[in-house]
Every structure is written in structure tokens, then in C-alpha cells.
Image 1: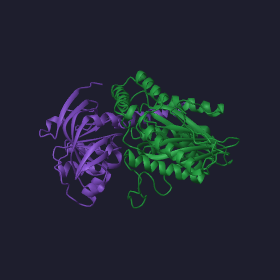
Image 2: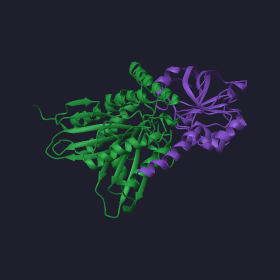
Image 3: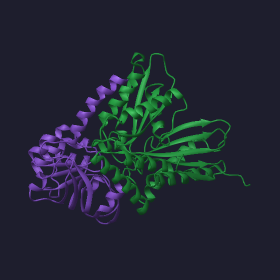
Image 4: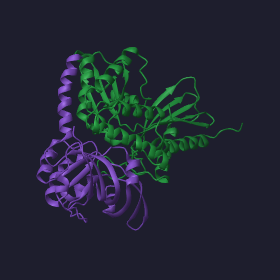
Length: 197
Length: 299
């Protein structure tokens, strides 16, 4: 497999930044990322509440951090990690179409239904190492903003990051998905394994 | 020696639980560290190597920063071995485990994951109705108590599967179900982890046994040689699936496969799968009848 290494700063303004990424590539992220989870997206899309942060060109992280409150609307990180993405796949299309989100990062991957919206809206899925939260926490420099605190810890978070990664492009904007390829190969392999039982 | 009061012993168990919950989240056992290092050495895929080297870096950072290995503080699960002569009744042991869990959550502080299962409202500091969860075993001719804390993350717990195979499916049916479950789970349960399998008993007991299986030290084998052989065989087969670290493809899909079994009805053949992520956290306290406590990362 040809593997390239990229550094990308979010939010992006040039779509070419996303189009150059290919499934399997390694990526390190700089800039600002936005933390989001199940209840955050249920509020936006099922309850129709406009998010009080600009999501254009954004990098969304599937998270719900451990934090310490240090003042009105101010939080200090304790441990920030990433949750399983598959539960939230149905929000991919509207995040791209309505809000111009360009990257979704989580762990465990998205099923195939994410491939077409990601291709159509020029989005990528970044695979992070689930459970590697101690390291991830050191790459988050600061919690800059928190909205919807009543959903704690499933608020809308803005983090400033430095050298966030390494991430793997799991699904690219060209219709390729590592998860699809791995599942297809494993399903074929199962037939061979069953025959040996 | 002055008479030890029940309340003193209850406090000792509460202290142990509070310590175990935080400690297990930060300092993973040596057998797990070794298994992850071995996995990194034999993985050949590029994304798989990237994942495993990141995991090893993460364990080092958790040590040096004294931080949690994973942000998911899980659902607190305890397995208790209670000696018949241990002077505190299990009803009080349960209260102590619950109080210790809550205290650790508030004092550290840890993220509070517990919610009402219908309303989804938070129910408190990682406690609630029937939380924490405790597995009990009672031991004759002994006056001690062993408490093992196994914080169970939701990413892996969501990848739990039960099938009521029929006797005609045989052991082949069990193997197929374990394989299809782990392939179907893909990257979601944070592989490579421990596949816990419970076979026999009843539907509920098979899943209980699968949870017991993931709490064992990595690579330990069932005392029944027939079951131990099945553990070896499934371990090998699971690593042939190619799912790989975090489901990105590779040689290492699981760190091991543990099986617990119970005898069953002649018409039953239940098989339950419970997955434990690579951050397979566990820590144990050995508590003597006088409240003296020894902490043990490896049990």
C-alpha cells in the first residue's frame, strides 16, 4: 500500500486539502477541532437547534471528555479521548450538506453508508486509536470554548490542538474505505476458516 | 487485639474500592503491557503498526502523566471472592463497593457515565440502580475477601453477542459464532483485545461467564483441557481474520481468547461473546479478616 504522510490545519478553507488525502494515509492535525457526540447531534438534527459554533470546514471529534470546571464556562482537561463513531453515522450527510463539515474523527470506523455522503461533500473520516486518551490529552493544548453545558459531557467543545495524531484516513473523499476493504476480505476469509472447522 | 468493628471493615472495603477504581484506570497490568509489546513486534501492516506503536506510546504517557489510559471510565464491575468466614456480610460489602466507586468518581474527579436506561439522565457518580455491577463467588474454609475491579468501557461492551446454538450445531457452531461476531465487530471494540466466551449454562449465565473470562490474566487457560484446547484454537483462528488493530487491517486482531464454561441442559448449547478492549483494565485487592489490604495488579 502506498502511504503518504500529511499535516493539515483545521478549519480548512481550501477543499483541495481534503481531496489530496487517500484511504490509508497518515495525517497529523493542527489548529482547532470541535468535540461532539450522540446527544449533541441529536439536538442539532432531531430537535432542530442551531449549533452556536461555526462548523464550516471543521474537524469534528467524537468525544465526551473528563474535565474539571475552573470558572464560569471554563474547563480544564483531565482526560480526553475518542468514542465509537458507528453510532453516529446517520449525521454524516447533514453535517456535510448543511454545515460544510470536512472531517469527522473517531474510532472504530463508519459503515459503508458514510462513503457516498463523504464523496459527495468532500469529507474524510479519520481513524484515531481508540483508548489512547492519555496521549490524545497531551495533544489538546486548551479547551477554548464550551457550548450546551447542560449536556455535560456531551457538550459542543472547541479544542486547540498541536500535532494531533497520528490519524489514519479510514474513508477518503474519493469513495475509498479501509473498513469496507477489511470487512470484504475478512468475510471471504471466514468461508475458508469455516471449511477448516 | 481489640475487637474489629463491622464499620471499620466496611470502611476498609470502601477504601479498597475507591483505590482500585482509579488505579486500574491508570496502571495497566504487566501481562497486558507484555501482550501489547508482543503484538507490536509481530504486526506487519502499516496502519496496524501505527496503531500499536501509538498504543505503546499512550501507555507510557499515562504512566508519566499519571493520567487515565483511556477516557472511558466505564461501568464499574467488581468480581468478589468472599470467604465463608469473612466477617462482613455481602450486603455491606456491596454498600462499600458502591460508596468507594462514588467517592473515587467525585474525588479524582472521573467522568460520570451512569444514566437511567430510559430517561438517559445521569444517576450519580458512576453509581445508580444496580450499579456498580458485582459478580459473587463464595469460598469455603476461608476468612478473606478478594475484590477485583474491572472498569468496562462501552465501546467493547456494545460488542457483546449471544446465540442459542442447538446441540446439533456442536462445537463447530460455537466456533463459527465467535468468528462471525469478531469479524462483525470490526474496529468498534478497540481491537486487539481479549475475546471472552461463555459456553453452556443458560442464556444469562453464558454471558456472565463471558464477562468472567475477560477478567482473567491474559493467556491463562481454562482448567478443563478440552476447553483450553478450544481457547488455543479460537485464538489462532481469530488472528487469521485480518481485522487487525482498530479494524484497519492486519495480523493482530485479538490479544487472546478466554473461555469459561458451565454444564448445561441436554437441549441447550448457548454461546456468549463479551469483548474486552486493548485497554483491558483490572486491579485486585486482597482483604484479610482484620481489614489489612494488599493491592495486586496482576491477579
